[in-house]
Image (cartoon, rainbow, N blue to C red; front, side, top):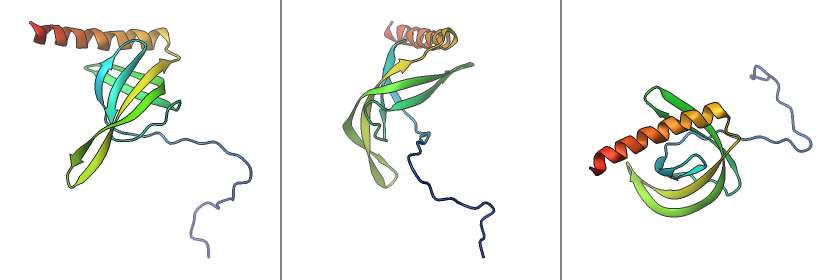
Length: 118
């Protein structure tokens, strides 16, 4: 007897899909064109990704294409050692609203950087 609530069907032919990966990143640098960050997951060159950024009340979701991904280091998290990748992403399809929100975040980061440089 089938215990599933819904019947599964075998897939015939090509069906595309993707998985949204949730992972924390350490941002190295950022501009209106793209960003460089560290992550413990490997992202394939030319793959698409979505990056959610937020500072204070300003939040923005950005679509990007991975330009470069290379193994940089390893990091111990609890008992495991995880690889750390340095990833460069180019932002694509930025609406004026997203560009404006991203600029607010960059301006905030500049202010914080300027205050620590003095």
